[in-house]
Amino acid sequence: MLALGRLLELTLAGREPTEKIQLTQAGARLHWLAEGVLVVTPASGDDNGSDLLLSAAIHGNETAPIELLDRLLQGIAAGHLRPRARLLLILGNPPAMRRGERYIDQDINRLFNGRHADASGYEALRACELERLAANFFSLPGRNRLHYDMHTAIRGSQIEQFALYPYSPERSHSAHELARLQAAGISAVLLQNKVGITFSSYTYACLDVEAFTLELGKAQPFGQNQGVDLRRLEQHLQQLIEGAEAPLASLELDQLQLFSVAREVIKHSDAFRLYLPADVENFSELPVGYLLAEDIAGTRWVIEEPGARIIFPNPKVKNGLRAGLLVIPVSSNGISAV
Image (cartoon, rainbow, N blue to C red; front, side):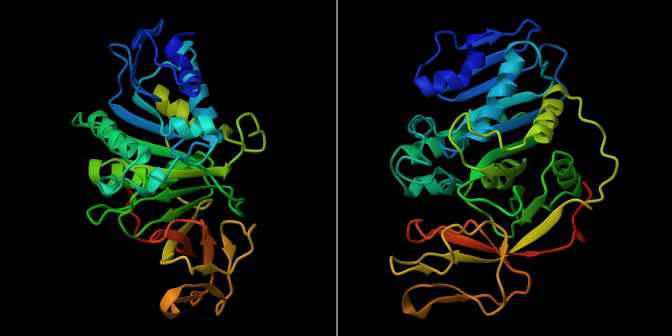
């Protein structure tokens, strides 16, 4: 096993590798760029023209995708996977990983699309660094570009594995990419309708990348993810890495639930109150007329949309940030086939 194949071990130990570049037996090159960041270049003649960014640990305690990324890299380093796509592998928040915490000072996934310029501390610097690394990686012209930013959620979910598809006013959501997710075991996709400040929002809106945030179950400590079944996703990623993805039988999204954002619930002050049980699950349906939240100046969120569901409810976020999303089911009509 090449030393760089143990990126997770190096990162958890806070060690910088002695050798920054190593070659697999098949000739693929592993290049350590920064803490928790590795680029994999296929051997000469193997490159199929695809660039794939796989990121995890943007929140340091979301371990299932970290372990998945580690398995993929070890497979490459040991020669079990022969990459034909260029890969950028990122463990996003190493200090938080070492502490087993979501973040150190602030949520790094609210600091992209330049938002880090108005913040300070480690996470702001790291968001800036990750934007630079991603921009450099995706700078080669004429290539297929894809980014999966892999997470697990703070709470349980009535739909365990789902994706968030970012928005850009210049682009359309792709039925082909949605069908890919369906084949990988993703059960639902939230189609966003405003430019966001997450890592996948940055790569989608600014770098012309097909990008998704993947939510893959509930956050657990390292070694305790036996209840999270990522086999279909792992097989899908292996196929993307090896350039062996099976052709999609159709673009019918019959097994994929689609949702759109109806409203954001923004916490404006310390007076904010969210009227949900602490253990409420993502995608819990709320009845019309339900008082969801209140804040200063008589601000109230009352459910008006039939079929509305709540995701990411979190009254502990900092003032000015999103404390939840109200989403509603939508059809696939109008989604581009490409």
